[in-house]
Image 1: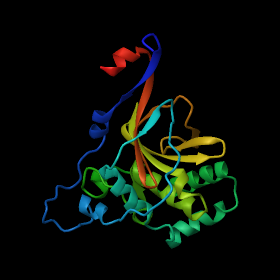
Image 2 (image 1 turned 60 degrees about the vertical axis):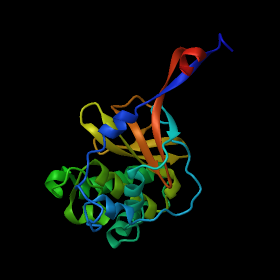
Image 3 (image 1 turned 45 degrees about the vertical axis):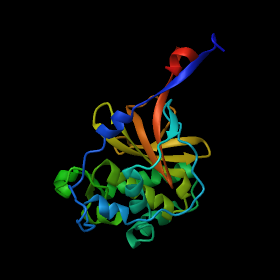
Amino acid sequence: MANWRLAILVFAGCCAASTAPAQTVVGPDSKPGRYNRLHDMAARPTPTIAPAKPDVFGTAAIGAGVTFYDARFRRVSVADRDHPEIRALAEPLRGLPPEQQLAAAQSAVAKRVRWTHDLDNMRVADFWSNAAETLQRGTGDSEDIAIVVMQVLKAAGFSPRDLYLSIGRHRQAGTHVVLLARTPSGFMMIDDRAGRPLPATAEALFSPVMTVGLGKSWLHGRRLSGASAHASAR
């Protein structure tokens, strides 16, 4: 065993913290207002079978336990799937193969939602809007757009277990959020900065740090060769 060369995982927990700008500051006596974390916590978790582990873009995904992103994801994922505007966008997608559903959903939402920073939309640094709120405004940032696409896909029949939001770094845009979708051909990425869904195995400008899915979240690390078992144990 001493001579067995092992790969080790290096996790960017500190990076995950840097990609999570604080929302409106709240205290223990604060009401669950629209733009604070207490509002996120109002969405209760529901028992479910854990989704598949998103080992995407050459990373290994490891369970992250409970994070405040879980509460955000629960809130937006249970809202608006049956909203009339969401259902109208989803109707043409029904019956299409999964990969075609992804492309059609991305195209439809891109025509309805223009990218705008949260500071301009809601005067807060970072907030995940429900899908119907984003469609009503017609503006949203990367996670808002990804959330609308996610809800359209679910309304079209896509399994919620196969849809994830991934928070990470974009080489050009900085902190960024994309939608990951698990299909029969593998994981695909829907990025509002790209014109079409892309395989999540290809070299990309986006590097995931944390991914949240139905009832579970993961941190992403990369396997590094050349580290011995002895060194990795220290």
